[in-house]
Image (tube, rainbow, N blue to C red; front, side, top):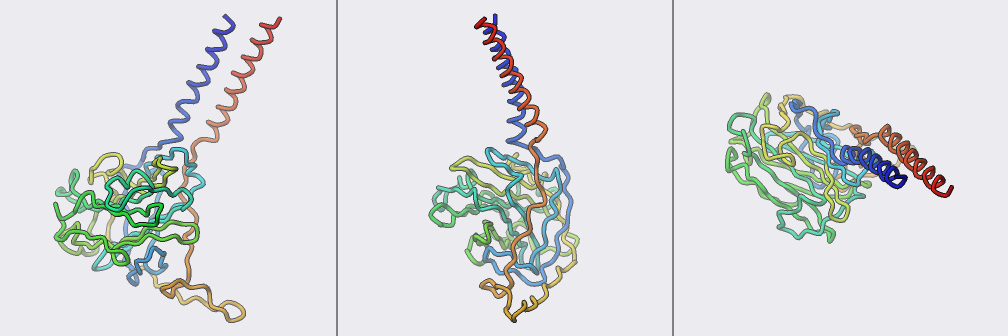
Length: 310
């Protein structure tokens, strides 16, 4: 009887722990109608995996805009930011995250790069033609040997694009380490997912996934649904092109002693992306409840053992 009661206490503890573990590993997007805007770049960015301050605007990611699969990763402590802009030729995207959890053992040309450290970017026309799976979906990774691995899962020209996308390092994409960040940068021509370059006021569909890996286990954040949770361009964020032009960055003032600030290869001052503003708490309260339950279960077992000794 006493052993039976102890077993019950253990099952109570496991039952309480299981839903907490589930909620900590996966958080579903709450906002299913993301509507935002994108500004024009003051100057086209250099596609080198570095953040050019006058070429990008930061994406305003609000709570509820992300699908999360955290696995063993504490997303609350992981730096992540996303940026975009556009001009008459391309839409520019830079995704920046903590480089600590990087792992990819895939070979170039593998379509499985998505299941380890990788980014996926999806774009579509925002009209009835783009309903369902019609989209441009591309991905890029850098494997453990430093090789670039790219893949096109869905080519926009199959639906709306006039041309096919082609990965050309330094022109259309780049992956680089920058101050503890692993940055993925893309210049995606309009005609790879639209019939022609759009004008201000046009709305496009947009989705991205930034993924980390812990020796093969996939962990990621997804902005809007429509990719990881099902290939459906109708669920993408709806992004309106504005005629607003991003302010051109001012020339950095000399520091005391006449020394110029450190510059990157393109001559622009080095910019460290700001700390992550969107974070997900997986439950301080839940942890307190868990500790309390463990204490109660432990106390119950100790009492039963003492009575057994008597």
